[in-house]
Each structure stands twice: as structure tokens, then as C-alpha cells.
Image (tube, rainbow, N blue to C red; front, top):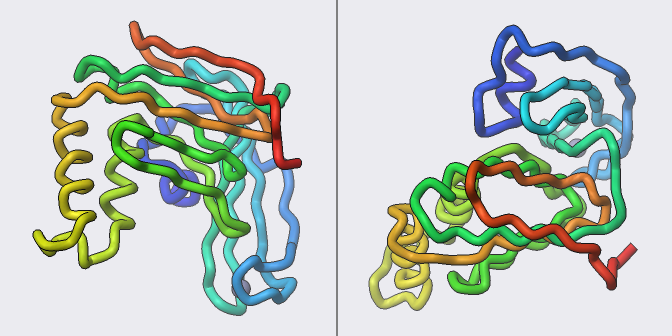
Length: 192
Ligand SMILES: [Zn+2]
């Protein structure tokens, strides 16, 4: 279970059905050697159905990578989540590796690079990831990004309404929330 725990921000329930469906050695996006072993797991998850988890580790440089997405792919899609009340922060997010995440009200744009991971988290978890990856200069009050981090923390406390937008050319991302306003639409201009 350690593998799956490392790939998601939420604990995977022990009794949940899963199995390894494939294992292959691919090129590492960091060092370029064909030394990254990727294991592919198939999970049956509550709310989402069949979900594919991939976990890779490079034996040369130690780079770790993971991805997650729905087994059944759809057309390129945009998912818009309206976060208006504290409970909306608990909305579950499956963010596949090729997906871009935007929160216009908070000035957040997370673009997928070649080594970008996919993950399962909550809306709050997405905000926490932004804080975790913020440059250390953001702790300095004279730095413009200090105010940005402050606003993100306000949002995590439920004091700011905002919109979380996921644009996924692979169509494997998904969102599930109880009573949260979620709009799904086709993504017209995919980069693929
Ligand atoms: Zn490597």
C-alpha cells in the first residue's frame, strides 16, 4: 500500500480493490536514461469508478513520478468548480498529469511540464500544494507574492469565493463534490 499512499494526498482505504495491470521501463523525463520503472495500478474508487494510478521511479537519478486519471477517457474537457462555501473546499479532485489548473481570483496557474505529476486531492489540497511550492521569498512581506500567499490562506479558511478550473486535453481528470457547483464542458482548443 505504500506505493499508492505516496501517490495521493488522501489515504487509500485498505480494503479497496486494486491490482497491478502493467509494469514497464521508460525514459526518465529528468535524466533522459531509459531507467524509470513505471507500475500501473487499476483501482475501483468510490465516487469515481475505475481509476488508473501510475507510479514511476528512476533507478539512475531517483526521480519519482506519479499520475492518476479515469480509466475511461473522454474528449478534452474543462471542469469549472465554483468554491463559494467552506464545504466546497472538500470537493475531491482527480487531476491527471496533462491537466492545467487555474484559479483566476487568486492569480494561480499551474501548467503541466514533461515531469508534471497527476494526483488526487481536494480543492484545499490544491491550494496547499501552491503554498508548498511557493518560493521562500514569499515569506518576505516586501515581496509581491507575500500578499498572494496571504490570499490563498484566506481562501483555505473559506473567506474568499473563487473558481477552480481544470483544463485537461486527455479528458481523464474528474471532480466530485457534494452540493458544489461543477460545470463540465468540452475543451475546444486542445494543444494535442
Ligand atoms: Zn532519471
